[in-house]
Length: 84
Image: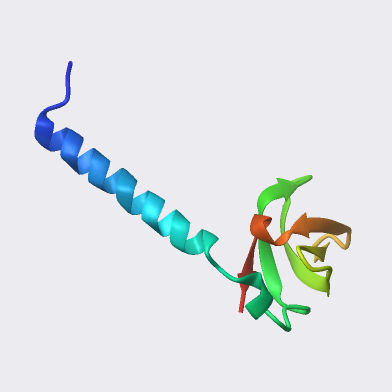
């Protein structure tokens, strides 16, 4: 079974849209994110089943996060979503 040209065009437009969104997200300047200590965040890659926590220290390109279970982990800023 092959895709019609119309289906291929729709799929390719969807992929291009997703890539554009990803590039826009990747262009966030973390230097502008002053004062992120105390912010709630979500990990993109779970740590022992935990995905949510609070930023307790900013280390430049990394942050220390206290997970909801009380453990503290170090993550790259690229690997978290900060909730304002």
